[in-house]
Amino acid sequence: MTPAKTPEKSKNARLDLGVLPGLIGYQLRMAQIALFRDFAQGLGEHDVTPGLFGALVIIEANPDLKQSDLARATHLDRSTVVTVIDNLERRGLVERRAALHDRRANAIRLTAEGSALLRKLKRQVTQHESRLVRNFSDTEREMFLALLQKVFPEHR
Image (tube, rainbow, N blue to C red; front, side, top):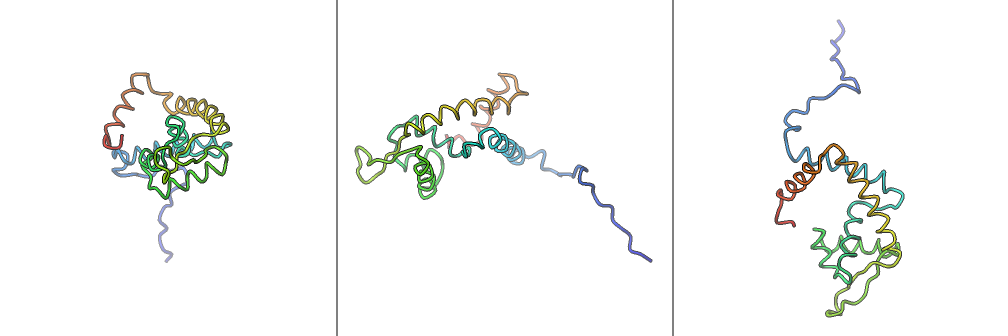
């Protein structure tokens, strides 16, 4: 007598995800995966992640920003921010200087090359965002942003 074979799920068969589809955290994670994939496809040629893009935008908006302030704004620990800044500096996109009112601290600002790249990235990110919410009305997009901002208001 041969053992009974259990039916195998085909590669195209949908798996039962149980309670996951009804969980906000799961849906946010799936949205993040879609967002990062689209971001990489649209901006991959520049070797910029969503995190690096965010850091560049914050630095542009706050010339001579202290590294510790960038860490707070990006919700990263200081050592991680140092690595991010090292990467951006090595690529010629930012420069460090002694902070004006605190010589012990570094201030960072975009270089001309960093500003030029960020202008291009902003256009591409605008297109990326449009693709992500193409099925939303303007009202739905605004509501979605407002609802997301309510999840952790203390992180704003």
